[in-house]
Length: 411
Ligand SMILES: [Zn+2]
Image: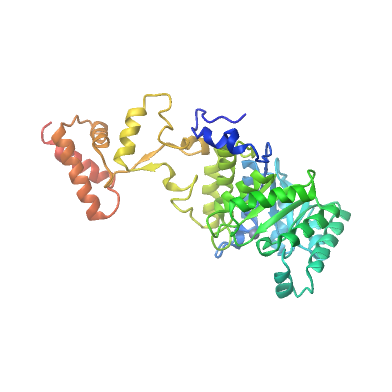
């Protein structure tokens, strides 16, 4: 059951008002499908060694993703990683291989013992003609159908829908999805390869997809983040009835990256009440581990797992914290959720130009002083002046010195 407030978070009930969600097609839960090993490794400059691929797969499985994708046909490295992952065994995730609509790709996937293939190819006629030299859109769809039938003959689960769906016409999408559904495909997706659909459009398109193919086929999302909308678009798609969401850890991927798994999980559960199977308490450790392996630090102001999510230097916020600290809501009244929810420890108070009287009093008390009004004003002025000079935060040793200089003289 969805709750607006628990001992870990407090979010608006507005998101779940009947007037808002009455015509949503929300599933009870979605499966998170992890693209870190495939799209994530397409991030320029990111290289995963075989043993690191295995480590990432085990980490993501432990986090609770339902699917993990590798590209078996691309290299012996990937096939070796796949074999090792299968040998160790995953407790939650099924393993998929990306495959072009070619028998050789599907064969390589099957040889590695994967559960299924995610079939790729263009979703629009222009790209099909210019990139693959196919004569017609019909040929694109026929290639998909042949691939689905061949993969099924090898006992593989099939997922597909192609890339760059945003440049297809609605008629092309309808034809492609209906034809693939008739061919027995298990899962369909709309590939927003350049991240330029918007969340209202994705809600509409997934509603149409559901109408076209009926209730029995899983609908998956695949969103890139070029316009900063990957997570929002996935939420739009889930509102339209999607049941599987693709993403990468830390939003790794080409250009602006892909939908980020930490954001997908927290947003879907807290803001839409849809279960994801993700163990939130492992999100931050997993994010740190994969950032280190990828040598790709998380942007400090990235939502959820960014370093600054639980840092504050604002006097106003710190004053609020002081006031609500003794109430039952003290831990999160000035935050969307507590850091422990995602496996982080505590809130970091930063001292800089935003410092206020309340935080100065606390700084003094923490250092064994009880300052008077004049001393509080003097410390505030010194900190603000030094912050302007440094153009950044004040290090602890300087705070110690300023407090001691102002308060120490009289004690
Ligand atoms: Zn992609």
